[in-house]
Length: 231
Ligand code: ADP
Image (cartoon, rainbow, N blue to C red; front, side, top):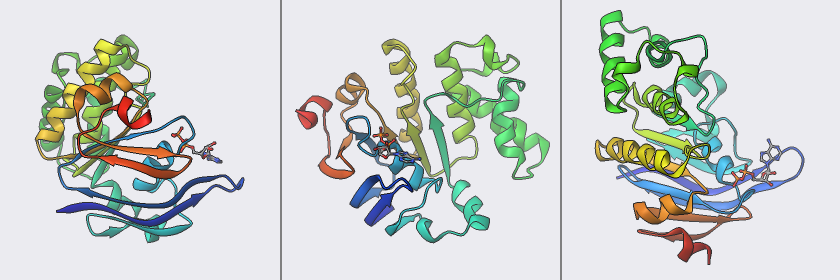
């Protein structure tokens, strides 16, 4: 079953740069998709369009039945409930503990306290950080901070997890640990779309690979490697 449908999408920023051009893409429920390409090829823009941080100038983006391109600002929460986002720079709140950073993502839904606590602990268990719940972000390594960010992104059980260069600030071993966590989350049924430069990771994971070049989708492989696509 299709989760994401992109048809004829074009994104031009106000400065006149065309970041994406006539993009067509279909992503099935449960897929794991890498979006690769040189710096400036449009990877981040695609991720931003999917969580409606940006809107396309043209075309259609449907996610789980929601027409994202047409979604009014007041209705964006309907989309955001269905997805989680992970960034290169973690974006944790420094004055909140690990537990509070994750629980915060649920508090906006007004759930009962017990439910918030249970879900938060489960998410922290999943990323292997239950024992660090009381620490603050600056007491954790980069890899651990990214795990907290992943726990926060999935604590509500979203259908879709978007990742924009999640391993961009991490060393290779730590990055691979992050990928293992993302793979577990994917195996539990969450669709994952990850923009990355990380050649080694793409080659090791053997997932679907989409290559962008100057805003155009130029290759789409079911089980791709970075080197083959870019070469
Ligand atoms: P990537 O993630 O592959 O590096 P981006 O999606 O960030 O690519 O950028 C694609 C193109 O759009 C680049 O030419 C970039 O300079 C431009 N761009 C990205 N964000 C903006 C913005 N907010 N305003 C103007 N141009 C932008």
